[in-house]
Image (spheres, rainbow, N blue to C red):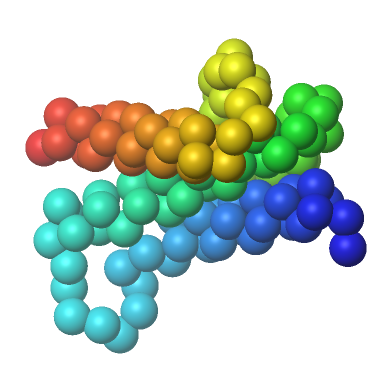
Amino acid sequence: MNPLMNKLGKVIVVMVTLLFLTVNLGMADEKPVSKMEEAHKKCSLIGELAAEIMSTRQAGVAMSKAMGIALAVDDPMLRDINVRMVSDAYESPRYHTPSIQERETQQFADLWYGTCMKVHQDKE
C-alpha cells in the first residue's frame, strides 16, 4: 500500500475512534471516572489525531486530500476540530529529516492535547 494512503487511513481510524469515544465515553460498565480522567481520555485522542494529521503533513500528503477527509466527518463538532487541525498543520513547514518530522509531530500533538485540557479545566 502507498505509505501516504496508509497515513490517511490512520487519520480516518483515529477520527472514527474519537467520535465513538466522544459519544460513548463513560457509558461502559467500568468504575466511574473523574472529570479530569475523562478529559484526559478525550484530550489524549485529540492529541493522537493531531499527531496523525501532522505526520500526514510531514509525509507530503496534499492538503486537499487531508482536508477532504476532515470534511467528510458527519459530526459537526469533530469536523470543525479536524478542519482546524489540518489548517494549522499545513501552516507549519514540511521537514525532510525524520528526527525533525518526529519533533514537529510531537509538538503539534502536545499543543492540541494541552489546549484541550485547558478547555476542560476552564469548564470546572
